[in-house]
Amino acid sequence: MKDQWRLYLCLIVSIACFTSCTDGTKGVAASPVVTPTTLYTTAVTWSQATFSFAGTTPQSYRLRSTATISKLRHGHKEFTIDIVDAERSLIIVFYGYSGPATYTLTNQVNGGDVRITSGKQYWDLALIPSLSCSLIIQSDIPTTSPGINHMRGQFICPILPAGHSNISQHAVAIDNGQFDISIIVES
Image (cartoon, rainbow, N blue to C red):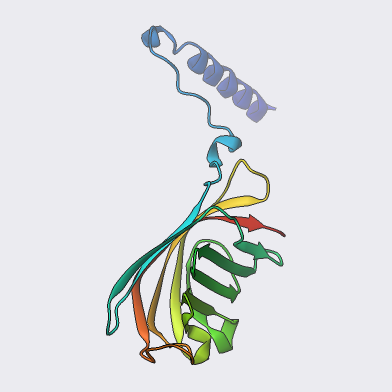
């Protein structure tokens, strides 16, 4: 009983302190209360990726697309980034996504794949199933559009083998890939 009275007394004193602290704040605007919806972002109207090939012929690329076709499926475990820009595309896939973190994509371990196409040329991690790329998801935040998240991250591929029909059979390396996308959350 004595403990209950102490608890009530502490509660009353706390309320009195909080409600009487307005004298020194005249003319100062109060900060808005943060609600869960203010943690959401608006969906980006485009998805983009930038990366450079660091092989025999260094080249930089920037892909932009207004189509949202990247997806998280099967309890958010199946991960697909798909950005198509004219005749170029970037596809990053793997199974085992669990939120922002660093992932190693290896085809024979988690179905990991990174594929870049430019016209009829392509470079594909899955051509040598034991190779790996790194994927860093920096943020994955729900947006105000239901079923759409805003995701940012980076990818690094020390070796991305050239496609069988490529003019040049030289592998490329990607050391600074970045993406900023809208991604569909299906489950």
